[in-house]
Amino acid sequence: MATMNEKDYYAILGVSKDATARDIQKAFQQKARKLHPDVNKAPDAEEKFKEVSEAYAVLSDEQKRARYDAMRSGNPFAGAAPSSNPYGGGYAGGYGGNPFGGFPFDMGAYGQRRRRGSAYNPETGADVVVDVELTSEQAKNGAKRAVKYRRYEPCGRCHGSGSVSSETAHTCPFCGGTGSIEVDLSAFFGAGAFKTVCPECGGSGRVVADPCPDCGGSGRTPVVTEAVVEFPPNTHDGDMVRVKAKGHAGTNGAAGGDLVGRAHVAAERLEGAARNGFYIVGFILPFLILSAVSGVLTVFAIICAVPFFMGLSMIFRSNITSRRGIWWKRGFQVMLSGCANGLLLALISVSFASCSQGMFMRPYAAV
Image 1 (cartoon, rainbow, N blue to C red):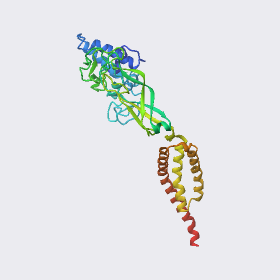
Image 2 (image 1 turned 90 degrees about the vertical axis):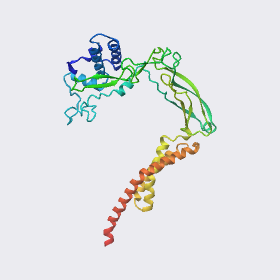
Image 3 (image 1 turned 45 degrees about the vertical axis):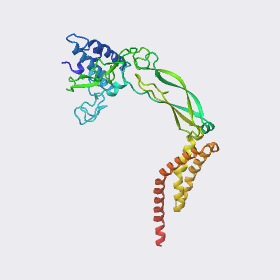
Image 4 (image 1 turned 90 degrees about the horizontal axis):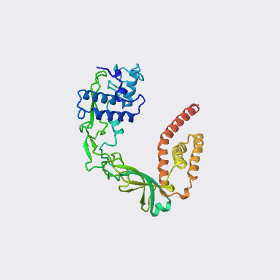
């Protein structure tokens, strides 16, 4: 039996050595459809199907492909890091105790990323979040705002099912509905057989019976649309309003997400120089208070007063007369955070200064 580095997986799939992941997947699907034992009754069809599956399992994964290319070039340990594990648990991309560290054989995440459009896999649509600018008056009295945004909507041709026929899904012919295919890699250090996510159904075990040409079988198409978001009176910066079923449509007929309007009220938003100013004031405050109470660090207190007044200046330059109450509340929260971070350092500094002052005065007291 030919070993892994003796097989030309690129030639088996009929792709070039610089083929993209999509090219490799497409080549595998074409060959697998022709060689699948349920379709091709030739005596060697099953063996060839296993061979192309093995080639796909290696070349479709970036780490396996890099390792395979290194082996073909005559340097099987290219990119390896030193390791006490004689089987290479310390290879780049290694998985700890896995003796085949350079080859993580679980392709679940990869299969999810590369799912074809014909896979039948209903998933609830995601929410769409849009930031909506409101003036102080609009936030106080309430307002209706029209927003334009991008979303997926149910396909008009297949009505969201993904199939133009009445029957929406079939059992995947590649994996028989299991969602995975078995690949024999026993030629590589006796690794044995491993299961990978079926590239045809993406692990769902079902495929769209008659994929819609408009949406590719997903049941949804991208559009730019408009909606009206109504904010109630006394809305504050960061408040969210939901508009039901105006988010992304789900795949293959699943429920859609919501449109979420997030209020952006400039008069209440604490950011930039003002936020930094509140934090600086809070951080320096413990130094000034402890210095005044303990009677030490007099010179240090004068030095600390410089950034303290700089922080106050940053706050007062932020047009404080137009700020609403929540802005001040957030400012004091940031200032308290600064106080908490500066308090421990201030206690240590004052204690150290007190000890140093006592040691300096002790010889004179003895005299």
